[in-house]
Length: 376
Image (cartoon, rainbow, N blue to C red; front, side):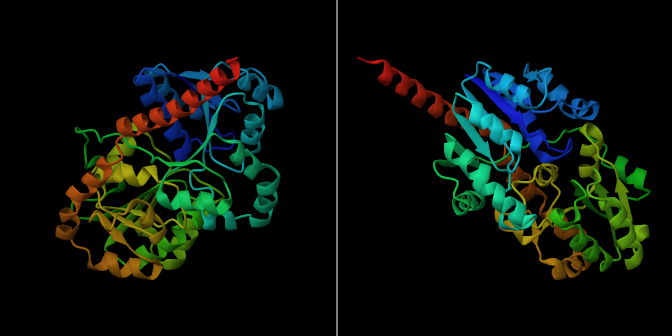
């Protein structure tokens, strides 16, 4: 098959959506398909550095027309492919491209229709929903939800049918990491308790206010936050930590990738994700592959099932501090096998095969309709 994956125009270089696109495209290419990644706007040098190697090593074509705006969209729509997958929602270039496509297309919301997400800029999204978003969804050949929860969100949004549930994937953790490297960088010893967050420093979305308040109530713990600044999040975190009297226990570092990021996971005692909404968080899956148990919000736990799998704990904001205070090393270590087992459910190779089957169903149905229309 000839498959196109579309990078949304407003995606942050270090967000989960471009990472999902890169790994899904690479695994589909390894399965023998011709895969293109379409750019609705040119990539920056930073985006090239983060994602181009994954695509290039798998032989995935990066398609970035030398035009802009509607001409760029038109040039992409004319390319010879069998199926197109649009990622993310409430993005006008996606809607414009969908109108021009003459092949089946798939839409992946990546958590964009969660009630908490819809409440952000609610009035603007309500207008956009009726003018562009829902018409685009209803013309789609398939909608892909990451979880059963997201499938219900799609139904509530009025997205139409069919809906397939296919999760994000994760690559296995390297075996030869220096688990002490990140700790040395932070000036921590082997017995210091380290809680790690990886993601965009978006205070509201990621629930970083809740996370900071909880760690403030648990003095033995140090908190390291790895990720890019969003909406002034870094300055807010440092000011809030100072007000809470825990600035010396907080380290905010910039975004990391590759081995440097993997070593941060390997150094952590626990991973924290207290988001108010998510699609299916890649950073959480990556932490679990390292055997790092996770402390998550109920909104995250209902998507991944961390607590049910014995891979960590689900806590509301007021419960985070007390949980951290009572956690000991033995209790965290006991959850390491369960964390790895939960991550193993999200193997990219198996997930790419599920996408392959879904695409084949769409392209097969299209060929059948063509044959029927051509018959006398």
